[in-house]
Image (cartoon, rainbow, N blue to C red; front, side, top):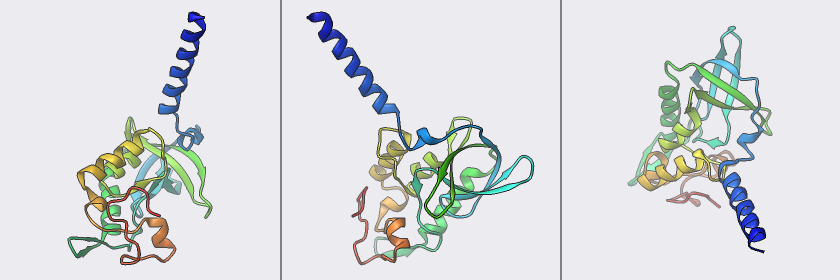
Length: 185
């Protein structure tokens, strides 16, 4: 009886550990990786120039950054958070050799990829800077990076903003701003 209990407890612990580190979104990313350098288009999209010279437009998997011309508000003052998100991504890409794993396509046909330079995850660092939000609601590095930025009030988390998806649908500040919320309605 004790042996069955220990086995069941061990199995449950293994399942919890697997759940903590497995993210079904990034699990879809499959080799072969695409190698090259990146140039920011907006806060979550880059032009990937492959080592052979071909280019791809790539969206970083599992993150949403403010749209390029989106504005946010801090202490009643407007700021160009979309431009700042692009500039943040540009700084993160500078001088890096990327290895990007294809992860699939978004409904609009854009290819999503998980892009890293060694262990340096580009999307994770966009979120650490507070310049976006993640749709990976699991215990992984992206959600952790977003939570830390939120707690520290970095980037968009320092004031009022509209989630990028809602902004694309026409919502603007003043009509349900995302004030200190991780998951807007």
